[in-house]
Image (cartoon, rainbow, N blue to C red; front, top):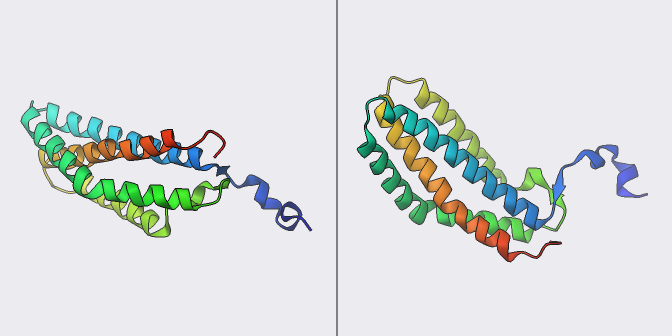
Amino acid sequence: MSEKLDNPWQRFKPVAGRRGQLALAAAVWLLVGAALLVIAFCFLSIHSYWYLALIGVLLGLLKGKLVLDRVAARNIEHIMSRPAGSCLGGLYPWRTWIMIAAMVLLGRFLRHSTISRDILGVIYSAIGTGLVFSSRRMIAAFRGVKEND
């Protein structure tokens, strides 16, 4: 029997080629990074603490270069090792999904904590900058993959 007949839910599985998966991974990093930057600048603009935003951006560039570039390279390697037409749920390895969930929970905790919005602005701008900066690795990989991959 064919796989479609064995599992009727198979047709609802979101699939994409390697190029689509790389585009999605880059878009996630870009969108989350941009959202964090917007929130950070809203926090910091209240008191016109633009120098704190600059500190966050510089820290984010450093974090991107030293940490997130390696994470992006591992994600690219993971995507490229998967067969074309793989499920989008497997876009990231399980370990990465767990890390994403932990970061979301930490972000919610920080936002509802008593930590100053100025400090949160620095943290958010650093993380947002790092994500946007390191997404360039996935964009480059996306450009290097053939159209039908």
